[in-house]
Image 1: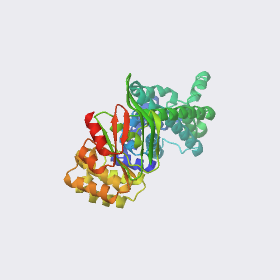
Image 2 (image 1 turned 120 degrees about the horizontal axis):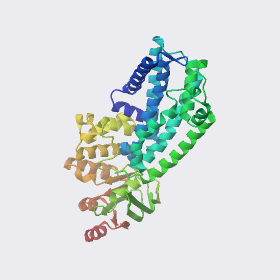
Image 3 (image 1 turned 60 degrees about the horizontal axis):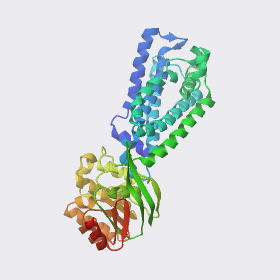
Length: 242
Length: 215
C-alpha cells in the first residue's frame, strides 16, 4: 500500500525528479561557497565532498520535518478508507524523502567523483548503516511531530525553528573529532551525529576519525518512535474528519 | 450485523467541549434498510462517520460483522487533485479489485465521459456523488452508508441508484441519512431518530417520521 501511495504522490507533482534536484542544488552551491571561502581542503578531506555529504542528509531531515507538520490534515480525505492508517502518511513521506535524498547523494557522488572532488566510498557498509540510523531517527521524530502539530498550532509553527536548532546537533558541517572531548561527549546523545559520523567514515575511510555510539543512537530513536506511536494513536482517536 | 454499544462522541474546540452523541445503541441486521432522521447538527453525519470507521468514538464500541462502505457524501474519500480515473485506480487498489472492471463500471454508471480525466476538485456535487456511488457499487459492500447524497442527483441518476440499490442489491444493508422524508418512507424498513445525542430505533418508518416532524 505504501507503494500505491508513492505513485500517487509521484503523479501529484509531475517532476518527481525535483525532489532530487533541490538538495543537489543546495549542496552544490553551499559546497562551492565553502570551497572558495576556505580553500579546497580542510582537515585533510575535500570540502566539496564534505559539504555535499553533510548537506544532502540535512535537506532530507528538513523536508521530512517540514512535511510532517499537519500531515494528517493534508491527507484527511484518505482516512475515509479504513485501510489507510495515519502512520502510512508518515512512512510514505519519509520514505519518499529518503529515496530522493539518497538518489541525490549517489548522483552528486558520481558527478563530483568524475570532477575529482569525491572519493570512492571506503566502506559501503558504514555508509549505509549511517544512512539507516539517520533515516530511522528522522522517522521517529516525524511520528512525534505529526500528531503534536495536530494538537497545537504552536508546534506547527515551531517545526521550521526546530530544524534550524537541529543543525548544530546533526554533525553536518563538522566532524566530532574536531571538537573538544567534552562537547563531543554531549553530541553523542544525538543519533544524527552518530549517523553522520558513520556516513563520513564510510565515505572518507581512515582520513577521518569517526565518533559514534550505536547504542545511544538506536536507544534514543526507539524511545522517540515509541512516544510518537503513542501520540499518533491518541490523536487519531480525536481527529475530526470533516 | 453492525452493533453499536453505548457510543459517545464529543468534539473539542478550544476550551469548549461539545458532546454530540450521548450513548447510542442499535443494531443493523443484514438486508436492513435503515433511515437516519434528525435535525441539522443532531449528529447524523457524525454517527455515519463513526460507523464507517473514519472517526473513532470517544467511548463505546462498534462491531462490524459485514463489510461496510466508507461514508458516501459530498466530500471525502477522494483526493481532489487527482482525476476521476486516478481515484478509481486508487480505490481499486486499496480494496483489492481489478482496475479494468472498476473503470468500465465507473464509465458506464457515471456517464461522465471525458470529465473523468479532470481533477475531482472541479466536479460539481452531483458529479462527485455519481463517482462516489459508482466506486462503492463496484466494490460490492455488504452495508452502504449514505449521507444525504442521493438527493443531489438528477432524475436519471436517482433512477440508476434506485435500480442498483433497491432492485439488484436487495440483500445489502443500508444506512441512509436524509432530510427527504419521501425517500426514507419509500425505501426504508426501519428508521432511527437522532435527537439530543440519543438515537431511538423505530420498526415502523411512519411512526419515526411523525416523531421527527414533531421535533
